[in-house]
Length: 103
Image 1 (cartoon, rainbow, N blue to C red):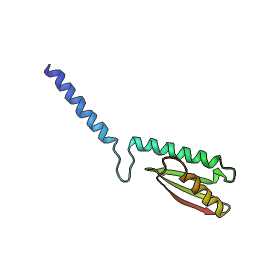
Image 2: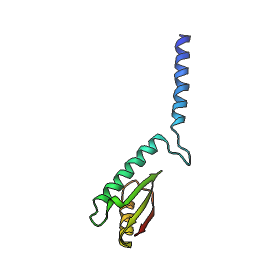
Image 3: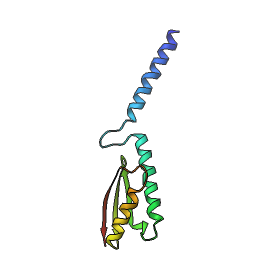
Image 4: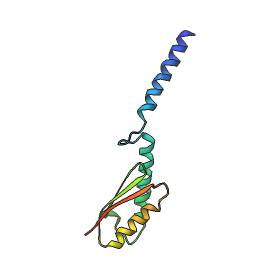
């Protein structure tokens, strides 16, 4: 009985350390946030790809804690605005930092 309690206590403590290791910090994402950001990045990239007026290969998308950052080079100011508009329209995006430049 005492041995079982010791094992249970040990497993509980180990699980606390494991969960604490997955927690996020201001500069580093937790495991769940990383997965969420990967999904957002994929959704934004797909939305930009499906827009015929944009060249998706020239636009880079990165996401950190729900904030999408767009970068790259496009042909005109309308494309910069359109890419930002598309990114803001994706569900789950908190904000968009549009660093796209015109060629």
